[in-house]
Length: 353
Image (cartoon, rainbow, N blue to C red):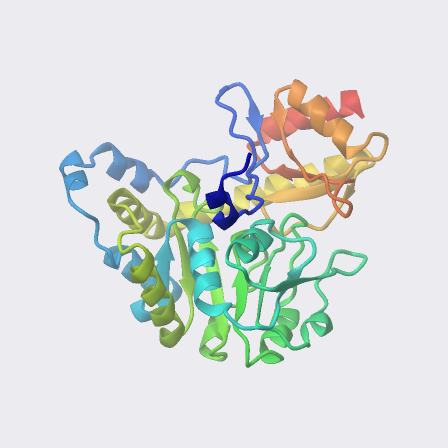
């Protein structure tokens, strides 16, 4: 029998993350982690970190990290907001800016946390269909709305919308906040980011993460870039929710990562090179592969169903991601790992498909 108090429980369908197997023999390509370790500078600092720092609360402003990110991107510290992974940053943005009676808009195939936050926070939303090639159409976002959010490159498709498309959406919605989630932008061609447009449009927020390109998913570091007023609004919500969101090791090690740009760029290029090789190998096997600007590919097998390949790969110790939904059920999302890992995946697919 249901208790009376259950009538007041906020019920939501939670976000389902990719599996995190502990077996070190698994080839783990299901959560878009970076196969290379973080910068050697990060490792050196971690090895010599004094545990005495743990007894005190962290700097609630994460000042060192904010200043490092501001310097790296060419912005003022007041134009940077940091949080516990980009999920935390995005959730703060949802709470701060999506409070209209109008629906917020995001693609019908996109990061599956967006509808979860909207449901949890009681935000009205409408999903906007991609076109037949899985592209975002700017004309579909020229309608009354309470805000817009989309990843670029998109997930799980890995497709990049051009700067012209993104700016068209921003410029056409000056009365709404537009959030561009650039979790995977470092794997796209140079000049694809729109962080510079935050100086041109006061309704734009760009969100980034350390979890993909900086190999630091375990430390949970994300950040937003926007004008000072928008950043202040997000901080006001943060300090009303939890003053100490960033832990001290994340602040210290996140700062070190930004200061080693040579290593960062070297590993990005390595992943892009492997991605192109793997894409061609999949095509030789008859897979349909969407053009990728991320550290993963979205691919549809020819002779087997995606579900069959997913299950067989798992049995073989290869974890990829499968989204059992009408529009994505024919595809697998496969993270780009080390060269030797991807060669093993190709060998498995040659034998199974």
